[in-house]
Length: 383
Image 1 (tube, rainbow, N blue to C red):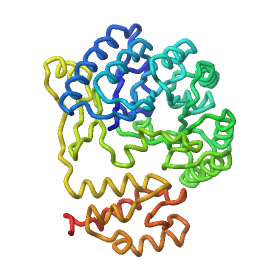
Image 2: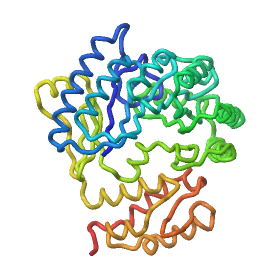
Image 3: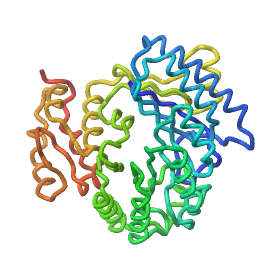
Image 4: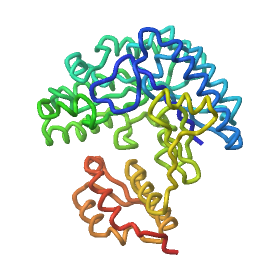
């Protein structure tokens, strides 16, 4: 099982971000402690209900987990180790932002048990960082990376965004080349998405965004550059040195069960998806009162089949057609023959060893491909 912990605090909300978080305030210590106390209480109840299952990865997401103190992080990880059967070599990841990562904190997180950090750089250009509302600057991002290295972290990922306002193809490629030269173990490169309700969505008509051709070139040429630098693309937006793929996220894409703790966190266990309220006060009240305020959804056959297709086609490994047949009773290749033939002809997909996969060119239009595949999914298993 995978364990996800949502840290709902940020120094300041970025202009593109639709994830749930709240301002930490000038001194968030009391709020951090209240959240951590409730989290550990809820973790204990969930662990007992689940029979103290084995956990092979823990991921602190947010929000900005690096706003926490190492002592709080250590307390949570000690509690997880006591409540679950935590693998000896478990991957313990945390997201971090440069402005809240010092060498002292990095050493503290390392001592607390964190062994992988995903650093939210987003850009190595001060004008682009300002355009999307990031708190840090280029110099701060580089210093945070080296602080992690000096603290002994040998598994560091850098997160970037492409397609930002005012960004050019050459500028993006220059940033990616510089990032690769730093030799992180992992790079995540996400295209900017204008999410409804965010300031950038409201200003979308006035933003100087790259056109469709330039955006596509950023994805494809940026990926090729990373591949040439020794990084393997293993998912639509993720590249890693061999053996340094994010095990936690890979578990999601393989359809493994996961437990999510904290406000807005999502769990999926035995075909039941539960989403916690995206409100710190409501979540705290529910935990303190001993009730689960999460919304439950029992995944039906169609939802399970769509998730299998969607999650599989996000990855370089692609869809195991035998697994699809076992779930649906249908032949994926036969049902989608015309689409597959056209994609293969255009160099957007491939077939190998019983797997159907998208190439980088195909991944650029993966949503459209998935929608067409969904249309051939039967309403119930044919066995």
